[in-house]
Image (tube, rainbow, N blue to C red):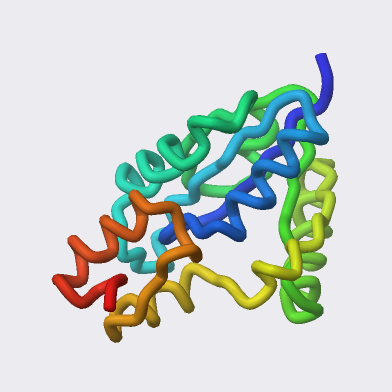
Length: 164
């Protein structure tokens, strides 16, 4: 059995940048587990169940991808799976500064390795927070998120949310 990529995140909501990292990881690893975090310190727009469902639909065409929810420490979730490597996308140096600390802590706590994958330059500006902000003010997020996510943003934010 080969290595499994563990792609963790809040995914509130999933963006095309997230999907690019997941798809590229699926081309490199035997399997990919997209780990959706339930983080009590964050107040997501979408429930854990909604985020998992959006990801399952968005990843349905990518072979070898499983979507799973977790809470608590990522290393504890990772230890439940054999031969797992955490894969994180990096958009900029500021991402690296945060992610390297997390990677080092995960290695210290659970001897879990982290690999960094640079984001495709076409998505380097994109974040879930930015998508929500644009959608809240009626901006068009078409092409930034999967269509089903765009529809859920419109539903959640009203007729101008996610569509102009």
